Amino acid sequence: MKIFLDTANLESIKKFNDMGLLDGITTNPSLMSKEGGNPKDAMGEITKIIKGDVSLEVVSTDYSGMIEEGKRLREYGDNVVVKVPMTPDGLKACKTLSSQGIPVNVTLIFSANQALLAAKSGAKYVSPFIGRLDDVGQDGMKLISDIKKIFKNYEDSIDTQILVASVRHPVHVVDAAKIGADVVTLPPTVLDKMLLHPLTKIGLENFLADWEKLKAGNPDIKI
Ligand code: E4P
Image 1 (tube, rainbow, N blue to C red):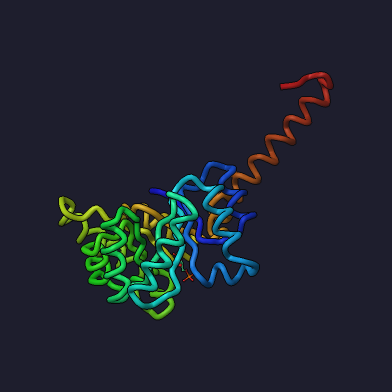
Image 2 (image 1 turned 135 degrees about the vertical axis):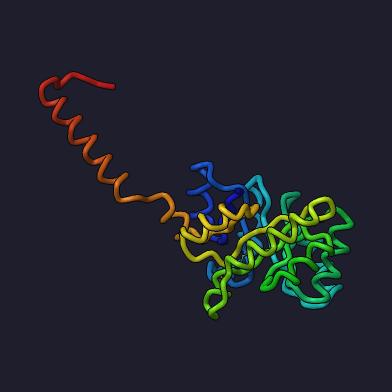
């Protein structure tokens, strides 16, 4: 399963990219707004730092505006995936951009039918928002398994990838991997939590304490 970081924060992107963990980035207008400054600078930097796919989102809601913005966004790099909303105009833009070789991520997916339609429009990725479904009392992860099953039934004609979005905690990641989702996009806080386990911390402390004991009798030893 590929791991994308769901942020426009350059510090976090560099931190996790240096660990070799990132296959790509997703952004949206809210994430850009959270960082402030000029989003053009952030988009330019992110597309340079990350070799994999970087989703940059349009803000137009009409077909022509989305096509125009999508083409401008692609000028940041060949790794740019144009993110469009799951609307009739969004799907029309998805079809046009995809047929011109520009990959598209259809965002704000909340049902299996929406995912099926986005796939038919040629999307490279569909982004089901599982956390927001959980928030309103629906089962976000059930949506992932439904989409997975549907795409598998038609694997000869659908090569759209399931990009699990709106991830809230590490259990979401394990469940998405068990289902076989193609990608999860994670807020930096979730990726931080995935790195840690209390037994790892205690284990390391004990190893180092024992090493110090050994060194006390042999001050010159080195590894
Ligand atoms: C990713 O592409 C989405 O924009 C993002 O995961 C939404 O997450 P949120 O529901 O935490 O805002």
